Image (tube, rainbow, N blue to C red):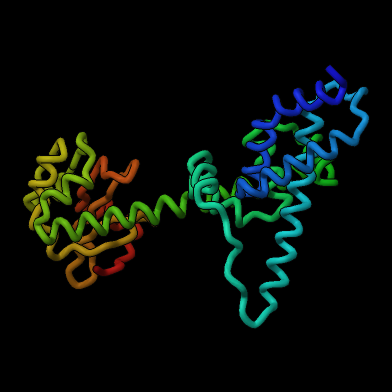
Length: 285
């Protein structure tokens, strides 16, 4: 077997790893394949006899290629933004992008697209592939401290955006719950409630006629079906919930716990001291 054949075999063994890095860096399966192919071309033209860690060397090469592509993409977007009418977004291959979205999550994929090229490089390599900061710094052309800051800044953006996405999804579930409760749609309520959902009411809410404890989706659906006529959507300390607020003053609030698109807990709070300590923003509906 020739030296080039051995090199090709070694490269093929690393291809899945390199493609994974490139996909997360670029968010595009087609562009990832281009980046990996460029890495192979650079490998085939290089003397790697002194390279002790070929996988690390290839990771550096494909990361540099991806960084160049990200910077070029960012420059194109800036140019497009200056035009009177921006053209439609570049076409993608739906089946390939769906696989990538499934691999890292559609919400995270959207967040990564908001990061600057250096931030995305540092976050993907360090947080997803445990590449040390000195190596990231070499790729990005900065100091290790600067690479660490890039990753930290990206991480804050990702966590903030994911929290925002979670809040938006929770609000959608709460709004659907209110509509189903008002309309007496028992089946819709069951679909929104986790089978093991727990509904709790504080002492003040119990005095208004609420049950202190209700367990299970069927019992909870029976509790709320056809009710909540006067409740409205509200933000409770920034989280989606419901409130009964005659005259604009919250008398009872419904705090929801949502996981996996289903309601796992509902807390009815009517104690005046607890309500006064809570930031309640009525949204109507």
